[in-house]
Image (cartoon, rainbow, N blue to C red; front, top):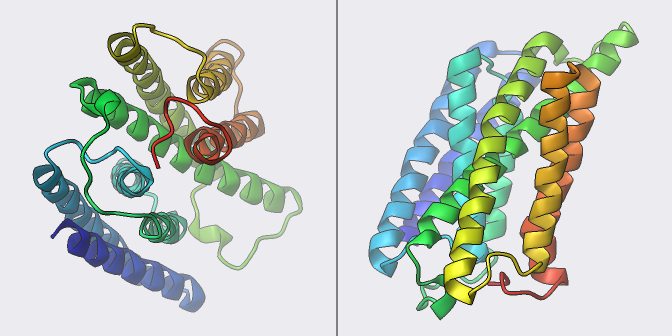
Length: 271
């Protein structure tokens, strides 16, 4: 049942992608709302698929690559809906919708059969650690998109020219404020994810920190965002500096999330 809901959600995400593309190509801003409602509907259906899988599996379905990518895409869509409502930014959806669609499609290329949990994952800390970590990662991924937009728009402004749809995106100051919101929300979630993961490791393996590859790269990622957060508050970092650091942090998240699983062997490798 849950997999059919995922395919349905993907359908709505793809429809949203198509509508946003039409809005850009035809310069029809009124199409943004149908695009937004499509991704919002996809989010609701996608969330229902996670709930259905939870009841079918009997555990929080964030335990392998398929479930992790699927849940990550759900969180990205959810945070976009939040950002759109708070900042009234519209056309960012033309990037978020295809990104969410792509991540869902990637997830469906991995085995999605429900299997018994390995012993190490049978813990009350599974939902706490994974949900906190994935929400933090999804927020920083949106921050990465916003950072790329900031750099592109800033470059065009300096050259005193604009690409054909640049006026549809938020101003530099708005993009910078969104980046700060991503930073101020994502960092606590990332920190809480690492702390709860450490506590879980203590119960599961008798050691709170084993310098496992995923633990090590998670710490490196946290340090990068901690430096960025500190410099934003203490030194007043704005604009390009923040954008470049957010991009670096995103690359580290991708490596920690996928690279470690496929390139490095450790206690956290669950494909």
